[in-house]
Length: 322
Image (cartoon, rainbow, N blue to C red):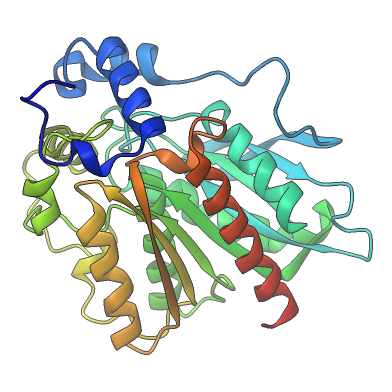
């Protein structure tokens, strides 16, 4: 990298620098200038022909919602359910509410299922701008409720259902917990949030410090947000931006993971701190040397494996009552 490298460049480890350079070659223009269709064509990834984590049981599902139905994919390791119904994690992929597919989260869901012994149900919620807020959240709310009702049909323990997601999916997971709390419904047993997008103000220091970071720039993040909520959204809706909630009290325990070089970092860490102040057990880990999106990049970042191991340990401890 030349002398014009941004100040954060040396915070990235060698693997992250290599991947960042590759992203620069692939993305000739910022995502916001590509638009949804071209960005999807460039960035949505397909499942490899030979997955890194083979599982005997991967099932395609159709889930009813108020708007019709969505696709989902269920992952189960051999050991899950061997002693009866297994716990389950409902997983919500990232992609700025505009990008992302079941295939893009496939390796991550396989790794979590294999490492934790939990069944993982990944949701293909509707995307913006074709389906703006609250469409994606309604899909997640409805799918979670459906799974809670039908859990035993899939060998899932209805008393042990969690929710998780990365980036926009972390936003939806946090919002789902808030929705169910507000409706006095049974809560997920835990929420697993990887660099969740929880604030709509874009004022934390990391938004300027890492404004031009790899994968997600501050300007692209604002564009994603506008696609999700619309340009004329008045703001303040805690189900769109969970940090706007008057209180986080009564929410399920949380595991929150962040990346060192990420404009979202400070918002996500502030959310973890606010959960703690409101009496919600919240564990936070910042992964050094990497940028936004690292958790799903299995094989590209050593930190991805470390993060997945942390998630799996957390889920096992939740199941064991630890």
